[in-house]
Image 1 (cartoon, rainbow, N blue to C red):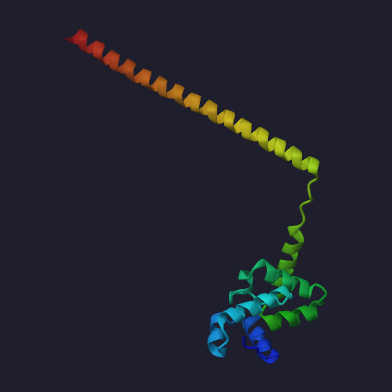
Image 2: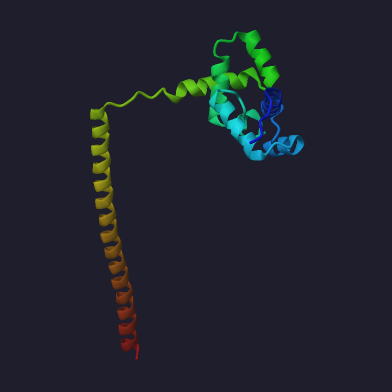
Amino acid sequence: MRRYSEAIKADVRRRMSPPNRQSVARISEETGIHVATLYLWRKGWRLEGEVVPASHKDPEGWGAADKFTVVLETAAFNATELSAYCRERGLYPEQVSHWRQVAQNANAKPVRSMAEQKDLEKLHAQDQREIKALKKELQRKEKALAEAAALLVLRKKWEAFCSEDEEG
């Protein structure tokens, strides 16, 4: 197994990170480092909390983990520090603010208690029974309507047949 220096790893991390965001295939081609090794490094950096997007898409196309990492990294920044951070990574402060708001709203719904959950399950079961009964009633009415239509057609045919007999 080949060992790479920290300088090479740092260069690769810089090339994978915003604003560079070069693809793994391109970095592999240019450095001669196997693609699997690069993916392994990127996975490790992401687990350490580094912002290393899985693609070279624009920041709005990043995954939730990368956006959340940016939110965490910038949580204590003032406006000047945030601006510098964003310039360095090719982001806009408005994007970071939006991502922060989304992260805060993600847990806005209160956690349900067991009793509330059971009540919801009972309501769901009751709704399912009602839906089943309504479907059954709809099928019955559709059959009755089809039968009425058939009788109407037969009646018209019978009247037409009888009127032919009177004429002839």
